[in-house]
Image (cartoon, rainbow, N blue to C red; front, side, top):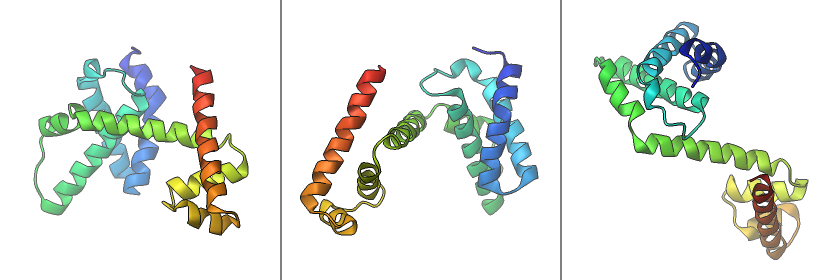
Length: 164
């Protein structure tokens, strides 16, 4: 594990930018970035490495932002320990982080597909369209859409097998 200073140098800008996207406020983002690293330093030994360190830090940052929003909306004081319990020990949080990493990997893999296959994948996965609707949009048959989607999935699976 890297030392805390190296971790801060490497990830503080990314955490700040992430928080700025959420808050749209420079001062709040700076404060929450500092809080994120204070919380992370406190429990860095509990980081299991199930995901990237940057993802773990951004999840801490996001939860701190949510706590800040709750505090602002309800004027309720939230203790550092409560944040710690909610953010760092929640199994569903880890699952969520890993799911986001897998989704990111999938979208990167989809970029390697040919244009039509990628378009079918996007329409099916993001647009939640059925094969008939996809075929109609692309001027093809529903069967063509189904086969294209299946082949694209197979292509991605093969690509991932070859990487391992």
